[in-house]
Length: 312
Ligand code: CP
Image 1 (cartoon, protein in one colour):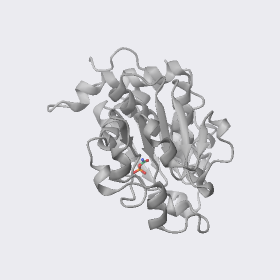
Image 2 (image 1 turned 45 degrees about the vertical axis):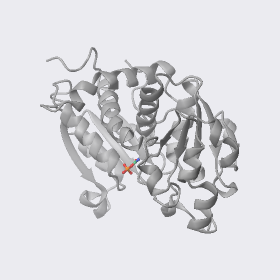
Image 3 (image 1 turned 30 degrees about the vertical axis):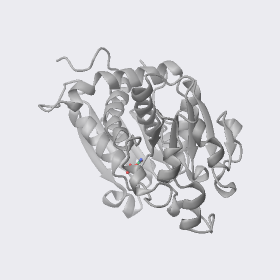
């Protein structure tokens, strides 16, 4: 059982919560990765609303797959197909759906704080599937799962999170979760992309990627979020790639066992070169696979699941 009712942010999670999520996700691996029927009864009879008010490929499809794997009933809602476009407030929409007795809302929203606000209008469990520049806790759990799978542990690992820190909910979730699990985190970004107060995350911060690259176990590249940028924060795509892009030459300088992660979607040729995204060090598709496992685990644990979740 987790110490939280909702999954809104990672600073609220204890090391025990995170370990439970990762271990439960691991227990779902044989089910999710087998060739035959990929279905268990763990959430049979539970109703889960996927409320995606902002575009998503990975998060939305992995939540929907995770719900199907665990036999939940899913209701898919998007901003443009709901009565929000007729002027209904989000609170009214949530109370309306809540009156139909649903068990869980999965919420992706452009506006930071929306998932927390929704908890005030429903008794159902809420999972934050990414809200503005604030948090993306389920992304952090799949990242930790991927890293733990490679190294067998998280404590003591050196992780660089590189790129557009200022606009990144991924960094805001991943950095505290890594710290909770005992990893050392270095934030790397040009001055215009740095966070105001890295000590909030308990991290070091630098603008010199080449100074830290060779010391890292994990190099986690962030997408440059062109859609969230106000004004010209970087001189050009090419200049950004030259100073902060992960090229083959840089990847070759990493430690022998070190890995590369990226949350997707990628700007190939900007923060990461195409051949690096597909190289042997890259764990980007492992992250995608872990997204289904960890989201199965989060829904299962938050809806009160116990045991392996697979037996009928
Ligand atoms: N990483 C991530 O959240 O991707 P999507 O926006 O495609 O869900």
